Image 1 (cartoon, rainbow, N blue to C red):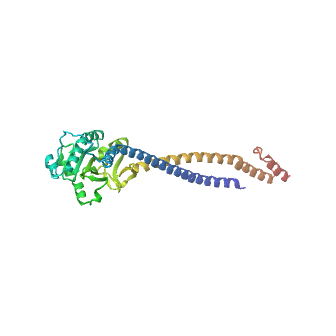
Image 2: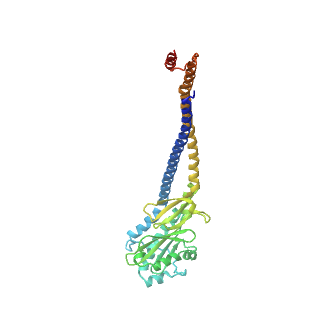
Image 3: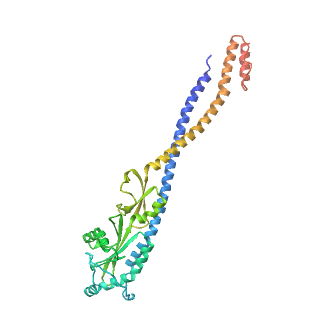
Length: 344
């Protein structure tokens, strides 16, 4: 006689194996997605921290520009200074300070402002290593740079700003502006208005890789980009052979400044690490669920399949008028006894 319990047992084992495989896969997939999400959140938090670092570095420069804009220089409160300034024109030729003052009275207040700020500029450059140079461009056609060395090279690098300045209208010349220069440099410019009508622009030339170097030292496997408020790239730490399109990009605004910080990481690194975790989770869930299923299958076989098989043998012997089975499974005594009495 065929044992129906054995047939159902084998069928149940196959269904359980399929169920364990699918359930372990779904559980591992959910765990994998949570791992990726946690890593992205961790990366986002890390990027926010790095943006705060850049904000801390740039804030003194912007505070100085804001202070010069809101508190214009007052000639009455100024003290005379004997510090001489080297001024140049757009062609890089040196200018005579006395002649400039004679031609335009407003130049005197600008020169006095620069005399008092010269030491402050030097101190700021020492505090901010990424600040390569500070340039003052007067609307009275003279230029001052700190430090004053390599002025010709400085003037050549500022050509894009002069072109933008000449093309802009009067209203467009006001406010803080950013501009990408050659050799991975970025320029911050702010128009400064004097009380007596004189006006000029303070330009901060920043070395972008040097500015972002602390961030890359903290995260060697990532590259960083500095973007303007419109999303245009101003510079970064990426190499020429870097495949930016194949990297994972995350963006973070730097405080209230006209900059954003982008972090580029290898896309393969994030997802390959997550895939390894997925395989590990899948194997783990598969082993645990398989052991549990095998335990239940073994118990079902011991408590149901084998007793039914013994009962089948008992029935067949009773039909042939033979003695029943000797070892009756525990808990099945009543059923075996009833079958024996039915025959008698």
